[in-house]
Image 1 (cartoon, rainbow, N blue to C red):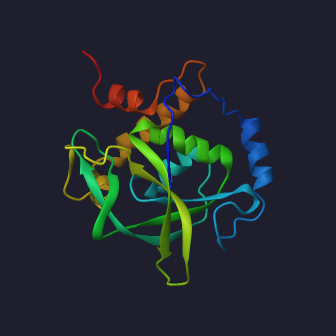
Image 2: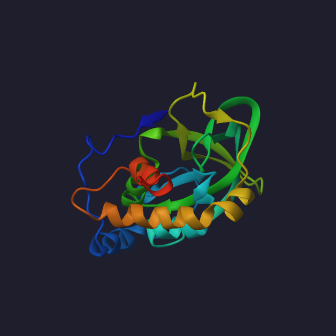
Image 3: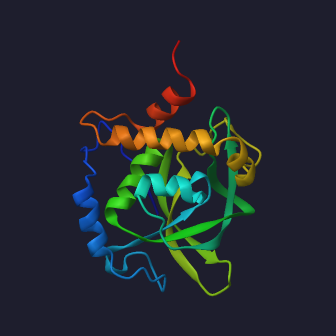
Length: 199
């Protein structure tokens, strides 16, 4: 099951103030990974690209959630021409290694939705924890254009960490600063203005 992510024009702007963050934290309660994603209104999100970096997640959520290594079977992680982050799409006999972030609040899930923007759709997938303890349902951001000619090869996290992460964190910080503004940019627009400045 997948949900398209609204463009900024369709979505009502939400100000992420410190007070709202504190209210969300008070609602969090325990962050147990026991079963599905909506216990106590909290969610689990499978991450496989830039969100594998705690440094990026901290910029977005102002915290680092509990996480566990996990595998998503039946998908492949592609590189994208003109982008430094990856895409996943269903591919038979392939698997994606990532992590499940647990205890994600509705506000934090909205931040992820806004960050992933219209390039991705949020889907519910089944992932296997790598310690073999259980399978569970989690949200994952799947590339929206399944026939995109710009997808190719593999995307390797460690190569991204060494070559791209520092600039990507700066772009993410700019995105969060703009999100606080009354007329904020979409994340894709922030990305393109950061990596391809005019002039």
